[in-house]
Image 1 (cartoon, rainbow, N blue to C red):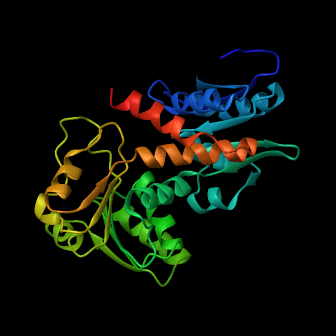
Image 2: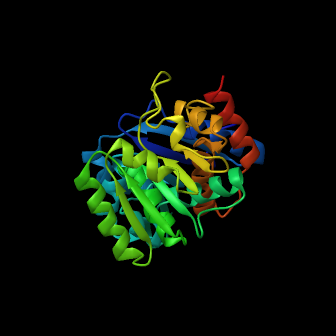
Length: 285
């Protein structure tokens, strides 16, 4: 990579930021394309984010990604928001335009693209079981509801969190049927009735984490998608696969949300194969 006075800088901001794989995939793509750019990871305290972003704009940064908790800070602080950011109440991508900064959210796009790639379809007409209704689960539930899901089962031990998400979904997509699953027995029973299972809790991020659901929660032909991408197969994916389900991890979602961000910033299609290869090398080494 030859840096020059013409090299366009991009960055992901977080606190902490050491775990991010965004530079790995974006720099690989830019190398493959011969695109004169560099993608950095910068540690910025969330309290300083809305000072730092305008400074980056003045410095000539070509685009910025944001991780938690910066996504919500940017959503509250940016004057201009794309419809995708408004849907999620969070911005993970900042575009610098002639008219100022615009917040986008590419997580929903990445989710749908990964489902299509892994299973041959997205969510239309599906009964979907969402395991874990925090930030990631909330995002996938809202995206699924607005993309034609037939019904949602919201599974979490936090009743208030589940109720809040149910209210949000109903306001966006009143025709989507919603059930709550707070107890393990109800979760097992309702999981078996769904077409797609989305594992959106942080359980599985450690290699020895057990599956939140036993093998009997899954049925043959079901599609099971775990947002965690650190391992080829988490414990819950193993349980689902052994029950006859199709399974996929979250690497595709990470990949495609990043690819979409690059297109927003540059108008150029990134090298998705180079991004995927770089991610797989970093994650599965």
